[in-house]
Image (tube, rainbow, N blue to C red; front, side, top):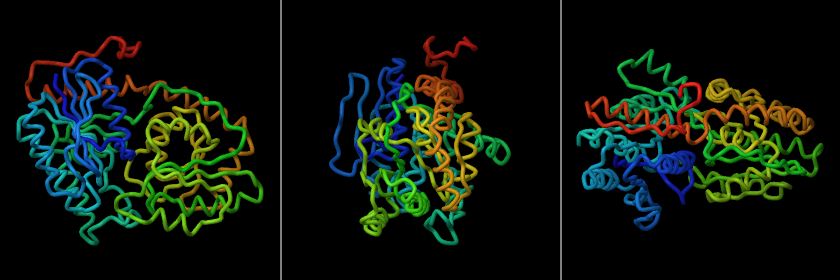
Length: 399
């Protein structure tokens, strides 16, 4: 089988790009594909990276450029794959609504070639708090969000990282062929030793709806009680909010213990989590699942998160324990952090529980679920070939 993957990809690390990197690697390691080609956007020069004889990265299009759709479609037509998987978020094609609209339209063009097409839709934007997200489009934002959903669901199979969204489609658009594939662990889970000094980690793209101001206010209130407390802020600026992170950084100059790391290369993510005692997700709005929540479980780190419906749904669906606080409540966030900092036993209990839970969604399980989704797309086209699932990927209870 020849597989094309359309996805953001490192070195530009975003949540969706990091996901695409790890799932692509897991699929390659399954050894069930003759050829895997990732068609990725490039902020600099277009280029090719050969990972192995059967795994290639083609940085063949630029975000926010009108030629992106043409470049993607050209690669699909040239390579004649058996399957195309598109790893999709609402802003993966750039910062402008037009660029992303055209990117979503490319799904229909790919499908028109007759190629079985699978999409992973990370964000169901039409269910989100568009005002808090500062979604572009003004009064038309809600209509635009519905349009993106309809364009994304042209695929033969739609993979959703939250069961809550699968249930929504079942109730509102039952004709869409959906499967639930949780984000899961990116690597084999590892219980990292806990550092001796207290440190908080905020790791995501920098945007107003990520709640960084709430966290910084809570952090200020905690410093008198924990003078050695540190706060690590890692991640690039969201493409729709250029300058936001730098403005916050300038406004907090002199605040002790704060480290701004910017973009963290993939090979340094493990070390990033190793320095933290508590990972904080203070989001005031969300559009979908959170890879950071799963990575915290994977590396053995305690979690604090705002009580958004999405955050609660992830914890419930994947049996993760999270210390929740009321959305936007600075004092509530500070209290939740204190609860974990003051109790090593509580941190350990949460970490052990989540580490056990994440074992059920290791990388090989994610790859197995995708192979099943790919076979479902082949069936939709009446293609008799199927991708074998290696025995080591089949869970013991079903094997």
